[in-house]
Image (tube, rainbow, N blue to C red; front, side, top):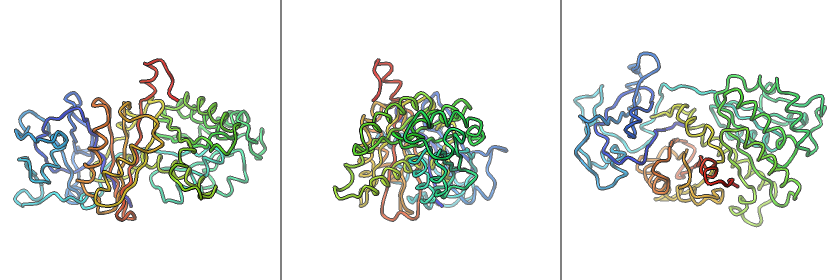
Length: 441
């Protein structure tokens, strides 16, 4: 199972962080007024972890109280923000205390796999709803990749198409039974919209109990284009954090689908907290001219998968440090239009190169320096090191606004050998554009 490290950073503060204490338990933010990254360890009941937890995982608490601030000032502002890196390099005077080995000379290892382990964390209920043919294909892709920690649903007007899906039968929702009789929407978004309205109660039942919902679809057809905005609106009205992640058609799919897609996206934008739009045409820049049509569509499905997983892994996969769902909600609630970048790399500078590739991704129309929130996720094999995480972080933090809210996760996936992948979600563009009086395209 993949494991994750997910602290929150406030990049605008460059003060030394003080004493690093080793504790156990779960993680939450404290001292927000001082704008200092601070991790507090406790469990939901007693406030302390069990002995078994303390022995299995070294957890970190960065204290920023005035009596514990180290006089050591590093020349590198990034290391002042993250003193644990200075400690690994032997550059700081901070102390490390292990409650089980107070008299020993224990060390902090570089390997994130060694540092990861089981921990106590709050589980958020996350559902991925694939709407229409394109959305269903994306969900099928997620299931095939053994994506964990989320509940998959598909919603369609086409009964035959749903029968081909690996989704559990009880999670296949046919909408508009009276309107379409299970024969599909015929590429008409109005039919897709009315089908979703007809099945409102069934949709509410499917969404019940969710903390976060991803509504994914391929825009331009009938069910996805017309139904996704209705389903998203129902989810948001139920108080669920609602994220839309959709694709626009390839140019070869025709003008009509392109127009319908833009109309569907406009409707969806009004019914979600965060909307990520992936233009399929831009994916063509990453493939050769000999790429078959079927492979191009598979690539689009895989991009949707990476977008959902990049966010959900931070919340659902336990590890050294866990981000509360509330932290993710803070960044993504009412964030408006968002953009996604994906980068992978190998070699000695793989983490830094992956970060650069994500920032320079053709999916990012606008520079991340304009974002008010950043959610990014680095995934690597068991050899991924803390130094590599910080190398990637430095690349990203050099570009973002100092006042931006950032959350990151580091996921250890043993199946990745020698490769690092970074998924970056930049949010908050809508608020900036609205303040300037012009819409985000």
